[in-house]
Length: 278
Image: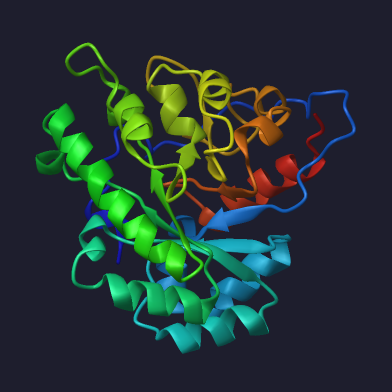
């Protein structure tokens, strides 16, 4: 799977020009582990699968999240991450995989060692109204219940369209209310919720423990919200991560959808987060 084929992004082609902000926070807490969503380095991964994983590890990342295996079998992926000293707690799979392919998806996840399988995107035709979101929630619930029997959790990853009101409600709220917390978690993309005009802390307070995974990428600020490396934008990361226990955050994945230099981008983001205190 290649997310480039279905992610329609409005402001990711330009590099942020802001310098990284101070690391902020006077607390003693820090992130235990920092991961990266491999979509950021997808072209390199396609050319040199294991070499790219090794380069990611050399930057200091400990965890990776897959968005497709670039033609490799689950066993090959498992051995590649083992040899490079990484772990892969989660992977993105297309929403269509919740159908006939679901058993194979779960088998692959078990082989590789994923603990989470994440739905990353909804086509526009599948989200025309709130009833469509309720039907999506039903499918996530059913998939999550069967995944739980295999020791795997299902999660949903947002963009900004879930925060555009429909019928005087936010679709994201409908998804949260309509999914069973026993079977469906949320991977909160902290850039897209910011671009959508919402405060992640409000969601942490309303839905504690639902956000086991987060995507971390920065915004250069309104109105365009150009995507930036972490620390080079306007998002207050200390303010967010100080509430990580309330949110339930266990895994943090750096991402930049269209960086000019993917490896420089993930290195800069890792450097910022490694020194962040909150």
